[in-house]
Length: 95
Image 1 (tube, rainbow, N blue to C red):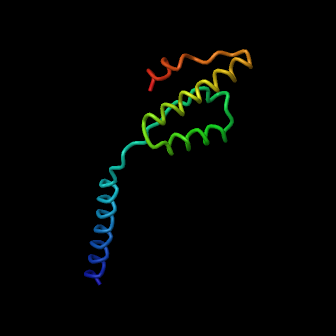
Image 2 (cartoon, helix red, strand yellow; image 1 turned 60 degrees about the vertical axis):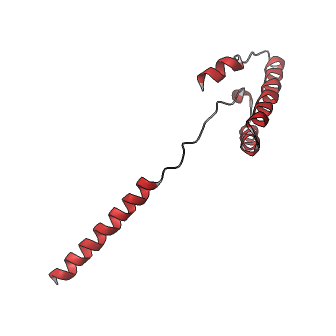
Image 3 (cartoon, helix red, strand yellow; image 1 turned 120 degrees about the horizontal axis):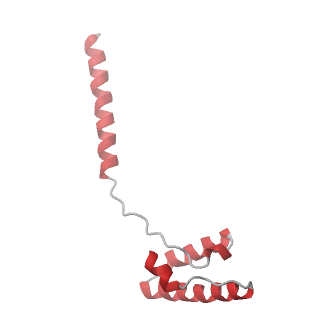
């Protein structure tokens, strides 16, 4: 009976150690987060659509074009509401 208990404890310890090794081996790169310019003027659906477009971009140049177009749209939206967005260069410096 004692051997059965020792074997069960050893098996449980092996499972815990194997699980810890798998967790330690998970070295996925951290997610790059961007502050979306004008996000306070956007709906939840618009923010998600912007994120999808950025993730779907094939190159850094395409991401820049998407971001620049978006900033222009948000600046116009802010202007129509009598608001002013922070300078996009200042926002980029915060990233």
